[in-house]
Each structure stands twice: as C-alpha cells, then as structure tokens.
Image (cartoon, rainbow, N blue to C red):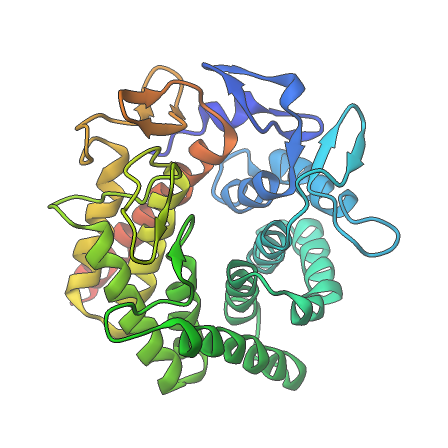
Length: 338
C-alpha cells in the first residue's frame, strides 16, 4: 500500500512546501512549480486526491503571470522569478497533460486548458530536459495527435537528435558532454516518441543512449547515481555523492519506458534494480524510505543519508512506487487472462 502520509504533511493551502528541517516542514522554504507539478501527478492516485489536486493545480494555474511567463517560486503570498527554469515549465506541461485524464472533471478540464494554451511554447525551449518533458506531454496526452502537435513533436525530437549528433562519439553515446541530473528523461522521451510515432531514429538514439547511461549507473549490481558534487564531465571522474532520489526515479521511469516500448527483459530488470535503490540496494546499503513518517531522505551523502526530507525526494519515491504498483497490477491481469 502506498504511503502518502508525508506528502499530506508537506501540503498546506498554498500547495506543497519545498523543504523540511529533518522531518518538520519548513514554512520559510517556499513552494515551487516543479514540486507542485509532481504532486499533481501523485494526487491522481490518492484516496483523498481531489482535495490535494485542487491545491496543486491552483499553484500551477496561478504561477503563470499575465504576460504568459511562469514563476517557479512562491513565498509570502507572492510569486517571484527566483529559480525560474524551462525544466520546471516542462514538468508543469507534463503534469497537466497527464492530469487531463484525472477522475475529476473540473481538474481534468483545467489541466487540459493549461496544457493546450501552453504546449506550443515548448518550441522556444533550449534545455534538453525541458524539451524531453514536453515530448512526453505530447506523446502521453489525451486523444490522437493533432497536426499541430505532430509538427511540434517533430521539431522537438529533431532538436534532441541534433544534440546527439553533435556530442556523441563511439564511446560517448550522449546528448551533452556531461551527465548531471534526471539524465533518464532524455532517452525516455525518445522511447515515448517511438511508441507514439514508430520513428526508428528515435528508437535507435533512445536505445543507444539509455544503454550508455545504464553502463555508467549500474557499475556494480545496484544503481550508483551520478552525484551532484562534480557530476560527470566527459573525460573526468564520476561524482559519487550526493546521490539524489529524483535521479533514481528518472532511471526507473526511463527503463520502464524502454521495456514498454520494445519489451526487452533487461530493461525491466534494471528498472526493478533502480527502484530498489530507495530501500537499500545502493552504495551504502541504507534505505532512504523513512517508515516513521512516510518520507524519503533527501540524498545519499558520503557519510550516510541527508536526514532532511523535502518534497522532491518523497514525490520521486511516490512516483516510482506508483509506477511499480501499476506494473504489478497489470501483470496480475495478464496472468488471470492467460
């Protein structure tokens, strides 16, 4: 059974708070578009999800300013431009695309409206991750692809193709000259493009880049995330710490996307291995899930865990839990029908 205790603890009338001090929500840390977008997706699976979805979609709707720009940060009753990023907008577009099929008509309609009014703006994105979130939003949205969205999808995927062509070599099969955070979203987006359109070039690049990424992340018999202290610059050393839960989720989702797209069992095995990172199959053998609160520790550090428990960490865990639970339920249905 999924544990939603801590997401409820972090949520107040304005949305989900960004950080905590240990297990105590930090009111002065403010709120972000990133976290409320992730929380909106999670809310669709909660028994009391409607009341929480209302808060998260309020945040997303009101973070958009009169000039059409998006503000990522909210504190003291006002939105401001601190920490604005294309990535946060991409996550919001994906969340609204997915939540347009939420079980509550008013939420679903508002999400569809926000998505339709803003997805075209992805054409101006230059962040590979923001583009990848937008591609997922298009591929996983409701209904068939319109001509306009198909054209946008083509332009966005071509941008990722061009990055790959410029930066990859026979030994470096990647879109950039470094590996940083949420790397899995890039091949995941192209697997999703292949599933939606049958584009073979998207499949080829997705397959090669994810295999390259996995060769780095699974250096031992467990997920070993690229740490944010130095990341991994091409030709340099791989940063070991801090390893963050959001990157485990990115790997879980990328490997599941690959498995669903082409059915290779290896990807399912790696997805399960990445998922187990949260509960102790990692470099320290320490679980990041806090049974006492339902939270997730913020990171694996060189000397153990970061004992703060913010929104990004617990939402990453819950999104992975949801993916895993849905997979198990699907497998049960297949077994019963066979």
